[in-house]
Length: 314
Ligand code: HSE
Image 1 (cartoon, protein in one colour):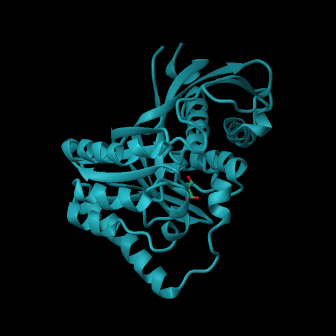
Image 2 (cartoon, helix red, strand yellow):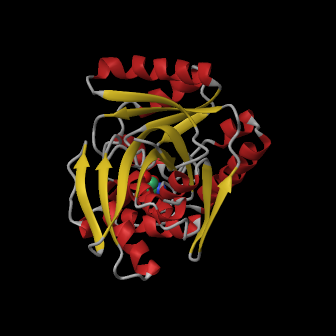
């Protein structure tokens, strides 16, 4: 069977860090791990069927499942009414973790089906389909998790209407440390507490930082990246939801991190570092802060995935 018409595929879909401090709803990055695994199979019965979800309790009804609605949007545009797809999802990213659990399911699903369709759709269309999963998950079709999951590396959403997503350069030696406190923060709740207006003085500071972050990535200028990792709009409101957030930020910088902030809508907190040694020292610091708190947590140290969702073998 040729690559174009094979009938099943298995993919790995990575966790992602959205916002990356200053870029609320527009900047995101993909991790090497953790990530979900998904199997997709073309079937004779038209439409989308979620066969099984392992590792989390999620709806099997396609219209209530983020992978299901993303695939439905894709099939609608593919316009071959007889086409059917069956999906099995192995969740390794806990829902409500702040590292793009819903995005991983939606992104993995659309990239997987696209492989079965001979790469029919360009990446930006896949982002648009996967955004339907985010609409179902939190009420807003934001793209700052699904875009890096699909395209890999860092991505920037220049515009939502029309959708305009740019893949950015990833510096070679940039590492990510993430702590995931085992408490659930629903993205819809974390969005609901945000103010709808910002002060011009805060907006000026924020877009200065976003521009500097992008420049820092391209110049591989780590001190500039460090200065740009500041969020004066969203973090002051959301940080109250995260135990020991300010101590984490302060001590992780002292331990060698370039900086960081809330991962997506939380409760995970991410730090960027130059080099693995610093990233692991940051992980140790996170552990020292969280161990006495009585809150369970997981810590990940990862490079930035430049491939995003990719095919894996059984
Ligand atoms: N940009 C989104 C938010 C990401 O912060 O609400 C959610 O993971």
